[in-house]
Length: 289
Image (tube, rainbow, N blue to C red; front, side, top):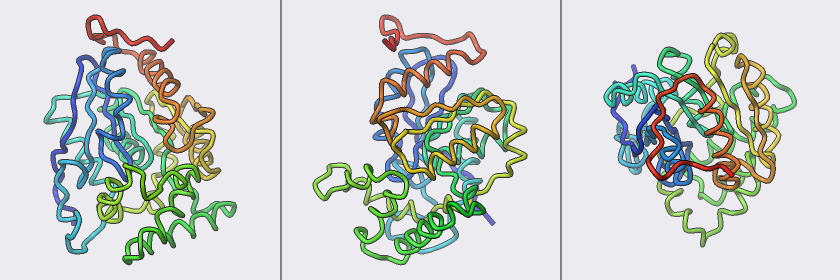
């Protein structure tokens, strides 16, 4: 039996239609969305960047560093955490934006509570469960599982983390040098990352995804690995009317590596969704040019 949902810590800024930012594995909301929170608020949106369970200041159900082993935290429970948090913040109908693992949480909430979702943006979604039955990606999936198990078994970080990141984006792995200032923050979150449901084991029903009548945007970086592109293509094909954008010159961290393009695409998509109650911050209107 799953533990009850918890209220998540969040950064909030701006006024207008709520835009919920859901981070992936490795970093909590502040570092992940530092280049998006301001422009979104300036464009007239109420930005709520949540810390998923066990990240940042959010409670972790005993899954943080040094905690005893226990059941993995499923994507479904993380979606319930998000729903509870939005209820408590009176964000009844929201735009969801999720990156990497966070895209799974955003998608799961949309599947469980579609009436709560104005639009759905999935960035470099780690929806690897859909690749398990594809013979072209079977070796890739097997290697991902092998590296995850090595990390969970306590193998040295250098033995599995870099190779795991390289499966998604070699450039991201190459940047994980010992002197990278982000490395200590990343290493602090590894215990939590390994206590969540593996993205290989999350397999939403394609028919349920195809039934979602929600404006949808799928974003990939052109430099991420073919497995990431394959997931993006499947999502764009299955989500009704989804728009699929591939950003040149960027990889898995497309929102960081191509910030201006990413923000322009995201804000343009959100602006095109039906609403009419945006409130741009006075004197600080967003300009994508």
